[in-house]
Length: 274
Image (cartoon, rainbow, N blue to C red):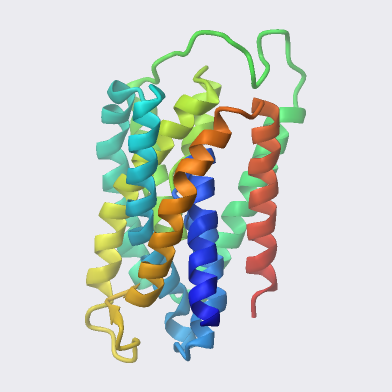
């Protein structure tokens, strides 16, 4: 019963942040599973792989639902999404291959390092350099469609990092699109759609990569743990519409600090986990 509550609560939180930031919920799910799976007797060797793999498949559910909700609100730029999606899927497949080859401790170190760097980069972008009147994060300057080379670089980087973290596209894509002049709601909508693409490409890779492993739980299909997937998905479907609704009512500065606060909590959980 304890674990069911953990899965439902983590799924609710994942859906909420998916709706708010377009993260797909992976940064919530991975720490939650890293804590919960050992309580179910899962071999420590497979905890991070199962956490990341399950997170990616849940992310398909949360991100697709969030994308539909964002589309209904008119937040989604489909031309920009089509430009980024193939690159992101390619990166996700490459990341899943790398993730299957890496030991669990390496995935954990990468997770902690990447989240730390994201927090530092966000603070540096906001406070590290002097800005003119038109350089604010909340500037209303017209958006500029990114160039093809830029789409390739950020698309593949988003897919690779998403696959290794079990997380969505927002950590890379939202700052990238904000710098190009896109408003936070549109950037979050694109990130949600791309998170679904990461989940499909990398999630399939993790499921396939774990099929030949010996010692996985009987309720697992490859690196997908079915009981956790069920509980997390139910919670996420409740949280996603709430996150989208809140995002349209909050000031962009408040959303920025909520995003950083969320990342700081995730980072603390992963550092303190034994």
